[in-house]
Structure formats: C-alpha cells, structure tokens
Image (tube, rainbow, N blue to C red):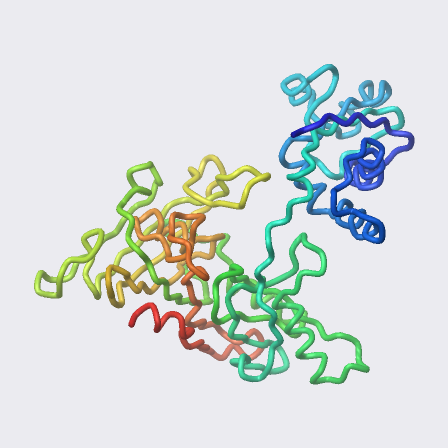
Length: 395
C-alpha cells in the first residue's frame, strides 16, 4: 500500500543525497520501519534503506516529485534544471516527476515520495556463484593481456549493488597474488563484456598502453550495411528451443538472409531449418524498455537512434527439438545474439527476457575469440570448451 511522504529541503543538496539522508528519518517518524527491524538490527536496516539501488529504483519508477523553491523556478531556464515542458506535462500541484539523481535541490524546495514499504525493501535474490580465478581458467596471459574462461552466473564488472563480486575483481585478486599482496593492486581494464549468464572467452587488458589497440579491434561504431568487419572475431554457441517466428511477425525490422542447403541435406527442423543451414539477421538495435525496468533491447529504426547489428548463424545440431546454433558477431551490440535469435523465432534456452524457457542458466557460450595482439600485431585465437551442461542438453 503506497503512502505519500512530503519533505522540505533545509539546505541545498542533490536529490539522491537528500533522499538517502531524509527519507529514513521520515519513515521512522511515520512508523514505517520494517517488522524485522527489531532491537539490535536497526543499523543494518538503515544501511539497507540508504542503498543507491533503492533510491534509483524510486527515481526511475517515477515515484519522486519535486516542487522547486521560488528562486529555483525563476532561474530554472538558466541553470540547466528540468525542462519547462516536462514540468507542464507532469505538474501535480506545482510538483513534477524528477528521475535525475543529480538534480540540485535548493532550500525550501519540496519533495514528494510515493512510497510502498514492501516494494522498497524487496531485493531480488542474488544467485551469483562464488568464484575465484585460478590457472585452470586462464586461457592466455602475457604482459599486456589476460584471457579468461568466464563461468556463468557471475557479472563481468561491478554493478550498482555494493559489494557484489565480479570477474574483473576476481582477475585483479588473481594478478595481485601473483605479484605479491604487499604490492599495489595491478591494473585490469575491461575491453569487452559478457552478460552475467554467458560463459566463455573474455579478455582483459593488463596495461593501459594496450587499450587503444584493443578498443579499436572491438569497435563497432563504423559498422553499417556496407561497413567493415571488426578486427576481433567472436564465435558463440547457443542452445535454442524454437518458438515460431513471432519476432518477425511483430515487426522486428530484421532482414533475414536464409540460405537453405540442398533437399537431401537432412530433415527440416523448426523454422524451416536443417542441420548445416546458414542464416543471418541484421537490423538496427536499441533499448526498448523503460529505465525503471529490466534492460531489454530490440528493433529501433536508425533514424530514432538504433545501431546497425548483424549476426551470422549456422545450425550445428538438433536434439529433441533443441537446436545447437553457432553465432558469429559482425557487430557487438548489447544482447545482440539473444535479440537476433529471438527475432528469428529461436529464443535461447533459459533466456526468459527474450522468450526462452526458464532453466538454471542462459545457454549461451563464448566459444572463441580471434584478434591481433595489441602490441605485436600477431593474430591470436583463444577457445573455451563448452561447459558440461551443454553436453547434457545434447545427450
């Protein structure tokens, strides 16, 4: 049950800092503390209430409104505040919805919060694995780079959730032990990313001097309908459970290049495919979800900010209706393989965000990476074997 909390600003502050400081006081004053905040646990509850993730959840969901102080209203057009059009559209008794954590509140401004206690304190269970990098997971290392076989259910880099472990941190711990813990922590640069549930080959830089060449190898900014391919070649393997061509029927904007083999190549599988068939999906991708929701990408026209994306696929095998598909990235957009397979009517097993059936993980694995060495220019290729669960899915 939502309640309305009205706060008045006593001294200038950012909206984020003001809410973290004043909202817990207001909640305690209204008797809104959680039932489990008993004696001896109040400090932990207060810390949870102050987390950045919870404040951002309130902001991005549109549950925070601001009525600027009189002097703020007069100078708003000059000091870079919220646009007048947005105020007029969202005005509620002088208040406007504000989703900017860095918005500057001046003295005497008022802040209205629509607060739902149950939702505010709810945290989705974190089922990240515990992981420490060791030599068995290191595919290659020299003075400039380190290449790792990433496990699934483990983030690549830090998230908004404080103290959440991640692969970059694990790589730093591994390198730190090698050089000696009495030394300063070593440098570790994130060059490209794998989604939390995606396993396989991932590269980090060990020298800032190597970053320029590595970023250039992975760059997709110049890719277009007739653009050049990236220097970095990435091949993935996905396990898909066909769901029909619903993505295309709903206007995904995808251009399908389907190249069937000869009639004797084998039985037709889902979506008119055979083992050995090649097909491509190319379109323009962008974020299609609200900032307050799980990040989801889909077709966005070029003129509205969509970025060109192309993936080349090959059907490797079929077992009990599941297709084992190889994906080669021509570009490197967020969720690209997941979106393109879903648009082709082949959602990845476990990828609920894009229509896949819920299982223990998303069955997407970065099988290989090929690129020129950032210092020597030598062409290198790294490969991470398929995880055991992929073999189990095929048996």
